[in-house]
Image (cartoon, rainbow, N blue to C red; front, side, top):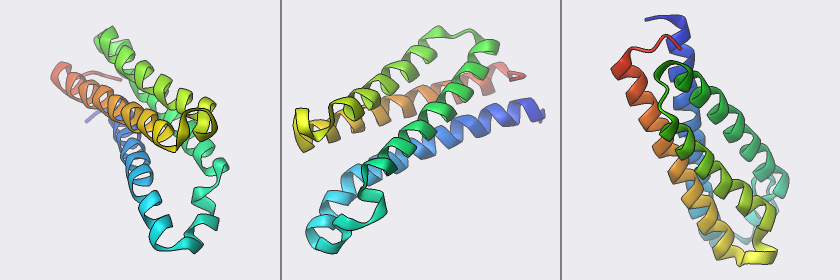
Length: 133
């Protein structure tokens, strides 16, 4: 398999994994905070962690989706990724202060799922067209 194709596939897989980490983080952290009150002070509950995770998702998504698009020209896949990222950025910008904890988590989960769908579509389309990404 071509190393260029490998980099695009790895980018898609990294972005899907980061989206899954984001979902797990959003779903499990509140439960763990309730169960273990000391967890509220840990580094991954800090806003800085969320900003770094958002940056990692943005960079890996931009890389993988743009590489795939250059080959297969499926603009709808770029829209999936952009739409999902918009939800994540909106959640980050508004935060729990403006939309509440449930609102922030909902926006984040929706965004993560949409991004994952975009990357799955990108991955499948690239494999189908045997992209040289």
